[in-house]
Length: 263
Image (cartoon, rainbow, N blue to C red; front, top):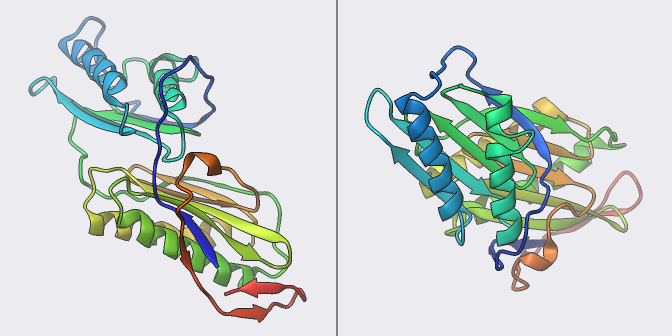
């Protein structure tokens, strides 16, 4: 049985909370000058994203006019509180691992934190599905990867469908694996995508799991428009999402490990 949590809940803003930097991609060939119109537009864009990220957890803006126009987007992970969401975005902009430090004077930057994602550029990227930009794999190996992959793909494909079909474009849930082990998964899209583009983006990522993380007990595939993650431990805030979880009943068969696997 798969337990899904497609609903996002944001709480009131409290205080600053540290956020964990993951990775970034900076355009090293395209820079703006100090005190330029582009810099002023970028500063306005970043403050606009920060002030509007709550309560929805998603915001996108276009500031200025060509050739100094700036396009920007911010997304918080669907299970985090408003406090963590806004704090994470603030860190991604001005923190020690933020865009201002990692990509000074760069016109285009994509930066991922554990709880949020920030992107800006001098060219429009809205409503365009992306591909896998970065991937990270759990170091633990699976004893029976073929059986594991069958379960993993059922979970992640179900989450992809759930995410594409709700307004937050987010879904998280788990599936029983082997005896007492659970496999947890998460899927999310930026909300400038259409329902179909979100689904296609997530499906592409799910199908890419064997290429990047075959035989590993966890993986995190990050893109500019969608992302997926799965682990053998609970990595999202289960209490912050709806208890009214959708369920999918599945057949149960014996795996080679001797335990029962839900396929």
